[in-house]
Length: 142
Image (cartoon, rainbow, N blue to C red; front, top):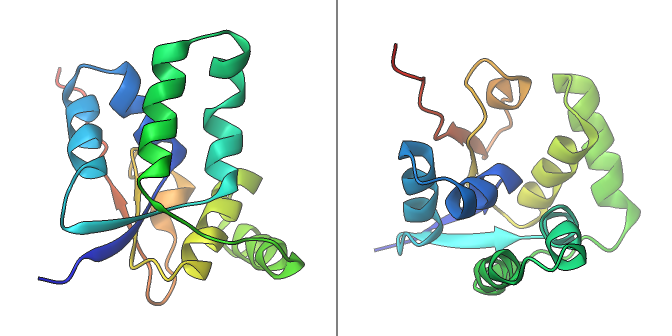
């Protein structure tokens, strides 16, 4: 069975580590799903590791390093990724980091970009040929 090349948004890692609710469980399941070939970038490292390292949160650092280390690192070493991110941000009204993550996902040949953002957020409205944005967001129950 072929695996789906998947780039996980920062919030998936954070929810997997910090939350014991439904979204945390869905995030942990997604990160360990054998039907996915995980992709990551140094952008993820930059968002996920500096603060836990600085504040000496060793369990969080270990979790993030293990998760990131189990995925293929997408090379983003030239200006083309930044230029693509600018085009994506302008076209879809995204924040800089969301656009950089999408550019890395495209560069890595991802078929899927997984996030926990609400479906109403700009990231979930992105339409890019060959890349499907999927939200794990679960609406709170009244």
